[in-house]
Image (cartoon, rainbow, N blue to C red; front, side):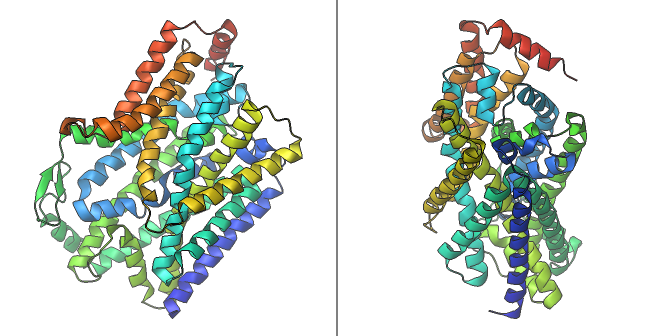
Length: 508
């Protein structure tokens, strides 16, 4: 192992140790499942904002987004970023405060439990189906995070993929199972800071190595369609392909996913002071816009570095930041330590998403299926043991799914995003803003959205080019329509349900 690799490893070890210490500290303050899964609703505005966005972005921010920009230019990455930025803002503006007030009013600590208590269902079917959907989509999602950690360490240090993945999983499970929601949220705040530093350092160093900003832009302008928002650059032919209106709308639809993301919605439910949500919204939106903009620029700068022969052409475009960090590490011990911080940033993206997903999946099993549907009565201490045990079991399943280093587990991420957006998004919006919605509509809409995600992706999308859109968009619309129609043709909700809706609506 070279001196540079040793320096990088030292920074990563310190970083991982710090995450575990945070978990250990919060374990002293985690006394019940309400603390474990929702932090006792004591989250401050800054932690709320940054933990929500860090848990959302995952390694896609530092690897996927720059990789897309590197290969095809700013069009696809740009429209995706715009959709996500708008979705982030609207989610904070429309959903955050109402969900915080409503979930607190009915004393719900998970999303499935909120659905169940909102509609006063007695048989818990809606809650159970919502919990199963979370587990189905989140376990593979979590597995992709473990796999990302394994591949990162394997690429950097030649460490065996399986060993690296297991160690990473142990660290993530360690601080999450110790401190629960508060540990995950606080580490997410730290991780968002690390991610930001990594992006800025990579961008500045990359521009310097590419010969300056003018050289970067000159290279990008020389490539047909590379800087266009309506064309994709084709690296193989050197030409460009049109990016039409249907494709733009399809890509913007990524933003709809936010309304149904359980790990983001939980942050809204955990806010201590609803009056501080405006501050959280501003911080979250500004950070998302800046972070994604820099991510896209890193891809453009990376191609400029290749043109300037600062780095060799990439076989895998998503490793651009790793390659830049490796180049930086060759400039002495200080820069090697900085490179370690950059690699920790990539790790932070993955960990901040995995810990949140583990908590949500764990709560779905222990709280909503075992406690809610099966009605197991446990003491407070036993509930905590079960909560942590379920989290560990889910992690083990995630490791098993990710065991094959050549598996296509990463492909599940965009599909899972569509799944959550279509199944939960319409239900959340109608539960919060439509008094006439009922449990029948919510259940029908949830099932319709989930089924349509599969049907559209694997059947309808391939029938014609005009139908080849991101499955989230049609599935979301269909789920929303089904929810409304079924609610209207089934009995009206009871007066106590509508009275509670009006009471929550009146809260300022």
